[in-house]
Image 1 (cartoon, rainbow, N blue to C red):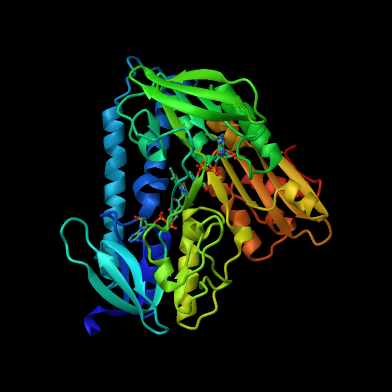
Image 2 (cartoon, rainbow, N blue to C red):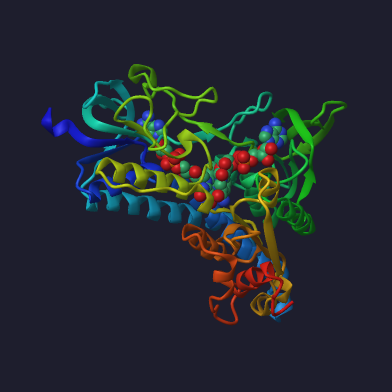
Length: 474
Ligand code: FAD
Ligand code: NAI
């Protein structure tokens, strides 16, 4: 049995799982990582973050060449879209990166167990995990002192709308369409809806987004939501807010979609070549053997954990999308590191307030910490400083001046409480505020840090100065 026993077995090779495995191995623990999909990297590398960003980049370049090069004095004749090459490039990026993770596991002497893992029996100090390879492979049992569940999430289905990944697609199908649809209806104005909607609109589809709530990107700061909606509408996305889809039926000629007001009432029928269902994701715990182990889940199916990511069963932990909260790759990674380090007696911490969310539309949207609405609800007194990219010389030089930076700081102590950005490279710009928040910095600390010129980051400094009502360039 000794060859098959580990200090840690991680079930799931996504950003949560593989990062946890690497950190555990770095700390000297004998580690295995089980993955069933045939390649490492999870949803993020295979069907999420990476392929979507590859298509966002390619479609952005196409849009630039189509609509913006001329303003720079660059004329392009005979511009043509080669979707097959664009998709091929996206697939190549995915393959290179997923193989890179396999290399990292080898380098760290982690056993990569290919197959579907389930907890078959549990005793304190030695949990038993069975791995079933695909096809006719024989199941193998392993034991581990600690098991980390990192099985991620799957698409939330919508009753009355059956996904076939051809005409009615989830994000998976939307990342792999063989031709540009003339028209596309997207259900859900969240992150996937806006990112994939941007890709296909740039490539030529007429896109209508149906959203149940009366705003897009519901968790974001309200000012950001409103301005972003205007920017996306100007680009050509159409929104039907406060509306729900009650049925979508695919036929040879396309899909007919029944839409009515969220409050109910008379339905209208939209016609589309393709419908994308993007109403959120739910935890993936199928056949994982949680019952065998006695692991508790919440009423929404998320694995329940304590502050140290331990489930109610000693030695069984869970991280990433499967425990809920922000469903983000970097959040899953950090939770993986915390579990691995806790197992070796270190005392890591995770500060969810300093974890940024980024939407990779153009311009990008990024947020960290509290929104103005959350601060008002909590009765926290705050100061706000805002700076528009129209007043930033680099954004003007680049011809990309939509958006603003807004910094929120405590009214008395000036400590950073949040930052919200719409703008070019907002996802990169926000990181200086995340670092500041990790160190309990004040807005004044950012305002007094010399920012290189001419840089987009000067807008962050100016927003910090604006907190104290002393911006220079506005
Ligand atoms: P996952 O990445 O889902 O990995 C879980 C893995 O476990 C899977 O590979 C699965 O096959 C495997 N597995 C499940 N059960 C078993 C089992 N029993 N045995 C063996 N293996 C099993 N997040 C960002 O931060 N930035 C982005 O830009 C971004 N873009 C996204 C775009 C799209 C279209 C989607 C769908 C998601 C995106 N996300 C993004 C979210 C991100 O992908 C997830 O938050 C992240 O992948 C969660 O990591 P995880 O390790 O918890 O789970
Ligand atoms: P989401 O939670 O971001 O958005 C879902 C949207 O659908 C919400 O606005 C919700 O109000 C709406 N909705 C729910 N039910 C509906 C209905 N019946 N009809 C109409 N609208 C409805 O979920 P999404 O976009 O599916 O993404 C899933 C997860 O993937 C997110 O949690 C996100 O964190 C992650 N992701 C992250 C990305 C990033 O970090 N850039 C990119 C893509 C996904």
